Amino acid sequence: MRRRQLAALVRKDLRLELRTRETIVAMVLFAIVMLAILQFGFGTRDDDLTRFVGGLMWVTLAFTAVLGVGRSYVAEREQRVLDGLLVSPVPRVVMMSAKAIAIFLYMTVVEVVVIPLVGIFFVKGPYWESIGWIAIAALLANLCIALAGTLFSGLALFTRARDLILPVLFLPALVPVVIAAAGATYSVAGGPHDMSEWRGYCLFLLAYAILFSLVSVATYDAVFDD
Amino acid sequence: MTEGPARMPGERAAVIWGSIATLLVVVSTIGIFLVAPEDADQGVIQRIFYFHVAIAIASLVAFAVACVAGILYLRTRNDRWDDVGEASIRIGLLFSVLVVITGSIWAKASWGTWWVWSDPRLVTYLIVVLIYAAYFVLRSSAEDDRKMRYSAIYAIAGFASVPLSFYSVRVAESFVHPVVFTSGGANMPGSMLIWFVVSQAAMLALFIALLEVDLVGRRSERALRRLALRLEGT
Image 1 (cartoon, chains in turn brown, yellow):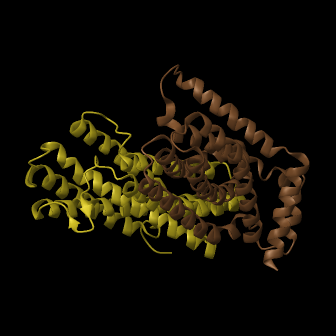
Image 2 (cartoon, chains in turn cyan, brown):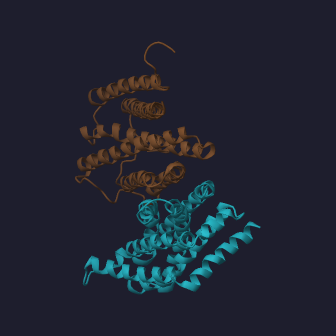
Image 3 (cartoon, rainbow over the protein chains, first blue to last red):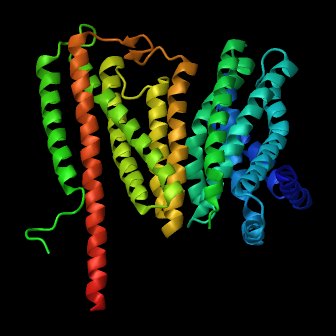
């Protein structure tokens, strides 16, 4: 029963996105613009920016995540879908998990564009192998972003100045994810191709995801307890 | 009616803990500056460690108390737990800012610079400060029941970030930050350890005293508001 509810809610989010193409297209464009701005911001003409590959990519993706997570409840709020969902017999935890899955998928689509793009400019050594290792770290980071993002966007939803509140709540919690994901990216793409370092960072991302999934399970029910 | 001035519940506890904290802070300060041996390596600046580490541990205890209060609030919906949670985070945040400041002073004396971005523990403590500062932003922009509920949820989620901050130290394998406590025990002689323990007790007592004072203040404020309402009614 719960699985069917979860599948239906995820389908609802994806169908809405496929019809409007509002969120993902904006996220991809934002990520590309952000990468370009960072590139210009560093102001290097001939310096090698490979050292900063992880930082450049994950700062971009963290801000893109804030944008996507902020948009994730817009339809529910503006078209009063949330009222309908809250009176339906769907457990809150299922509702929030569906949102987390949708955010995870949005981020994955953005990264399908961003990671190869960053790779073309910065990856040293075997291209596809490095991209593959970065992608695994990115999937783990997406899991962290989706779990924490769903919780914080739920909290920000009914606050005053919610567009400001979300980044203030979400970005500090994302810092460990950015540190670890950037470290993992650098270790396989820009630096010495150190797989033990990559493994360490990935384990950290996994620990973060496990911890936040426990927090999510414990608190998702209380977020929409109106 | 009883004779004498009416006391708020918890007032006596606040006075007792306040006295214990004052005594311990005075004793530990004297001990740290006059009795504890000077570190052969770092000299006088090492004495800041007794405050730095003790405040850091006390701030973590404050955040843990806020997390437990958050869980209890979500289970019972009793306003009292919201009071405990908010007061704990307020004190914890104050302590965390002191940790960053004392750490920064230590960094200047030891490494010649106020801030070392390559030291994950100092940096992640800054993140902890940012996380708990956001708690008050969230609190100020939500109303009534939602304010308490969101604060409780955020206190739980915020506390989850604390072990992550410590775990990140092990991942990044910093060789900069002096690690005082390892899995093998305390990395200091007994004559230093005793003053560290006294300093730690002082900081924990200070936390409890501040918490009690804050809670008594909130109770008095509520009692005054009730009284004002009753007076308006008559």
